[in-house]
Amino acid sequence: MNKLKIALLQITPTGTLAGNLEKGMEYCREARRRGADIALFPEMWSSGYQIPENEEELRAMAVSRESRFVKAFGELAGELEMAVGITFLEAYEPRPRNSVCLFDRWGRSLYTYAKVHTCDFGDESRLEPGEEFFVEELDTAAGSLRVGSMICYDREFPESARILMLKGAELILTPNACPMEINRLSQLRGRAYENMLAVATCNYPDSVPDCNGHSTVFDGVAYLPELSQSRDTCILEAGEEEGIYMAVLDRETLRRYREAEVHGNAYRHPEKYGLLVKEGREYPFVRGDYRKGAGVADDRLGG
Image (cartoon, rainbow, N blue to C red):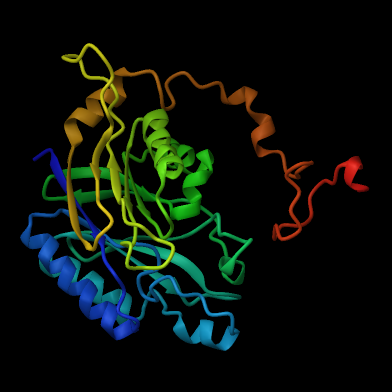
């Protein structure tokens, strides 16, 4: 009951919404045949992470959470009795969002999370950022656990995983669409280690431009009583090619570890962290395309 099987669908988009729906459902069915309790898609599966420059094209490509595309995966989750994290370019006002909807094994929508840290220096400047992080209790055949999400660039801000941990997350589902090299993989390892939780990341394979596979699961358990040294928290790292990659997360071991070890929220001093929520930025971090404004300029820049 404690061995949770996570399927990372590291697959290539077809180029059409209908094709992605059909292929996505096919891979979900195969993941369930392999015993998966959760299936996770790479970032923005509905469009294959395409973000048109033309506003009309962008809006036409977006789908709502009530669309046939999204609801079909909810129905499939109920049919297969398997949780599904489906990603999509979400129709939203004033602009579309980069979102993931988690359905439980009964086909119920637990949350729709929109990427908070959009890449405003690139194509995602045309998308609307999300406003908050969500954590919900996910019931699976292997038992329940607290689950939340972050998306790709969210990973690069320790606050993302930290907030999810503080909300009770034991597992963070992380859709992705970028090259996963040693530094980005190290970020995921760090988020899992410092928060004592599991991080499952699904990327596109190397057949997709600017992606290279290497989907991962880090279980966050660095120490076990029977080991004299720390262990590798990476329990899965995929290759670069398309496929379904399965990891088994030991839910009970993770919970015992979180009850005994020193990270997470065990010894924090939040009363001393006021600077972390101070608004404004100073040299060398002032960026003109930061959508909340130009921030605080440095005198050396003539501000």
